[in-house]
Image (cartoon, one colour):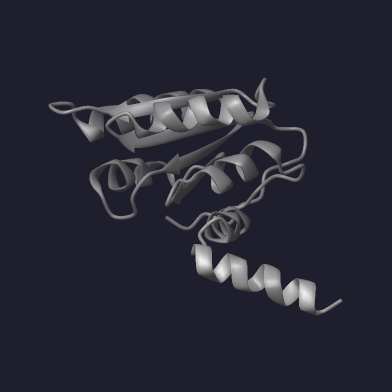
Length: 147
């Protein structure tokens, strides 16, 4: 799902968190705890046992097509899994950005970046949030030693 189209600055932004189970709802709760009122409309789409990921994708696709003035930033839990694969049908649409590997750093970037985030910039933010404890402590110690 590579869509490098950049959103115009005056487009409305909506964040969609999509996951297997209730992970997306938990992330939405976490974001609200951290930011308080969210700067852009944000919602969770949860694929529950017995539900069809294709139906979930078709419903969202209809909404994305009906609102070309809105940039939909769709963050998905797992690359290559059913939710991601189904939502990739939206990738040809200019107003949809789809990024897998959803985490708190990635979602915060999608909500707070002033400029319209692209898949590339969001992917960098998502990776920036992944660090081992030892790695982070060593980097902090190195920073202190540089002064």
